[in-house]
Length: 313
Image 1 (cartoon, rainbow, N blue to C red):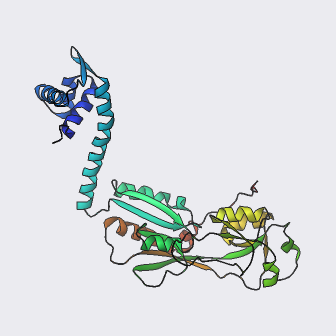
Image 2: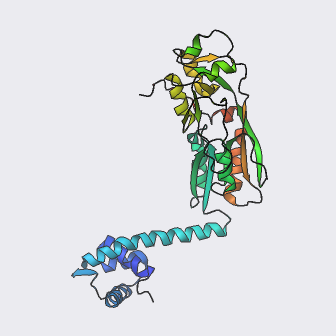
Image 3: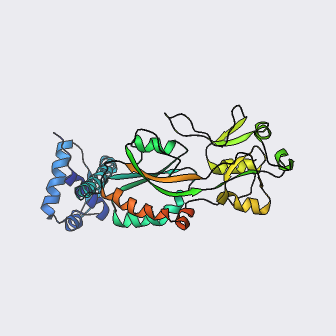
């Protein structure tokens, strides 16, 4: 049987912070005799002295310091567990994970996150980003509980519900120094095939990798996210489609040139998605909140604006 109890740790913690047995007793509502007995019994059971006593003032011994160092972790964990159990009983999930496509900006959810913490103080929140098929896999693999902006249609087989949030238009863009910028006509497949494309890597682990705007056999520079793709296209390292809103500043300044292509990329639809049959107060709260992004003006706030024109070195 364990000789150490959470009550004993709580008493030792209070004594260390307040400097005396009497002050600790007042804080945790124990009479001094109970405090003295609990400490003495623990020292006897462990066979070590935990405090150096000097009149009414006491200080921890090295053994006592080591005990309290680890013991405070246990006290925090116990307090957290109590709070989380109460939350579960009230219908709130202990953890809730939101997934977003890597094209979108998690920072746009800042106000929503602040409001969520005010409503669900003890539910741990996680925001994760994946690309292309990655968000859908994360949802079905239970790594996230809600997708706020997943690109394209979900995988076959069901198991989830969706609602459309909005769509994003794309533009084919190159640096003004790139050879394609001087072609002077609508670009054909053979024009594009001669030049390197910059593409965002699909973060899906099991599904066939999805590609956007790439030609079979085309030289490809694969990058982890859309912002990196944007920067490499600014530097002339490759070409490809970029979200209009993200690239608007660079197009207006001439840092990028928009070109017509014979096969333009159609708008990409983004979805809100959650698993079928899931219940919980956090999911219900986020569904109600996230559905507001179906408004075009509000959905636009999820897109970052790449105003940075610095070329990568």
